[in-house]
Length: 109
Image 1 (spheres, rainbow, N blue to C red):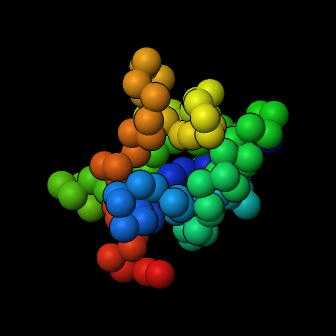
Image 2: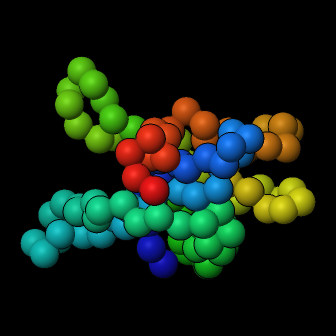
């Protein structure tokens, strides 16, 4: 069982998400707080597989400009579609809704 944060995305030329920036969240050495690791680039399928593992959970990870800190956002779930995809609002719309996250394609390859 592990906990993750998703802070960003990479898009293809058609504006479809291809990758996610995923951070691991774990207890600090004292056990009185948490450490969020550096982002790792996951393919869409690898991110889905990660969250399908029993007990793994993820939330969006959003930059709060006023406080100048990262904050946990909405829970991210795997949605049954063709193919499976990630979504932070499990409504009836069958598409990924994480386009509000940072587009790391402008920063990293």
